[in-house]
Length: 246
Ligand code: NAI
Image (cartoon, rainbow, N blue to C red; front, side):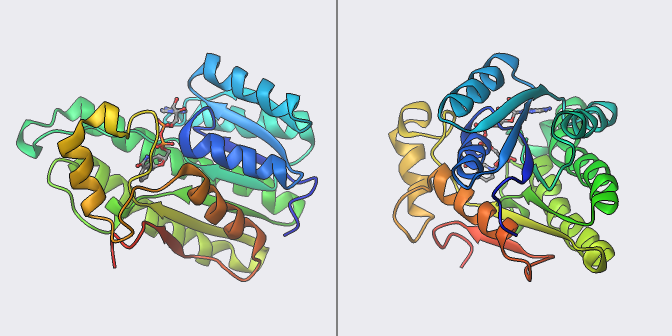
């Protein structure tokens, strides 16, 4: 798929991996909807990207609410006439010992990370079936493949994302709708960095990556762009993890 002129919606587009992906799409000539819960950050991101000569708008969404995701897709189509790319990237975590994990925190993580991907696939596919195809990319994680003691709900949600990706890819493979996922290792973001985590914890994370460092949001965005551009890749999860899961 040539991304020039294509319409892409990115949930969680206001920061981190989502924002880097939105920037990468703009650089390829796509029109971008920054879809996020964070209104201030999303508006600022859309303004910045539009200022750089691209076409970007902000649409508020709560990825964990079906009606909100339905509205996001409807607004995208009403603004740009179509949706060619849906990146279901919004995600949250909740660190807790499993026997102390509250049902509320568990449901919150499942709501955004897992239900959000379901809703994003469901409503994007409805439009893509009408328009003749498209590409969907879901942001999973290394923790969709390997366990982490305090990440019970997160593990569950990202494991589900990997299999939802396969199921939907099989379902729509003959309709020119491809569904893939990207599984980042630890990526330097506002929440994940030496200052926020402290030297000991940060160094421990670095040690788990054979690459000897954490990843960059741009490196994940690069893989997401690849998954959109390559027409023969579907139903797969690409690890962008510096060898963490090798
Ligand atoms: P981030 O916290 O920088 O960005 C997440 C964005 O999602 C924020 O802008 C936030 O406002 C938005 N968001 C949160 N809940 C939302 C909701 N209910 N509806 C709409 N938007 C919502 O985080 P980052 O690191 O960029 O994460 C993006 C994705 O990458 C997530 O799915 C995360 O699980 C995944 N990931 C991140 C890794 C990392 O080390 N940073 C590693 C592996 C996966």
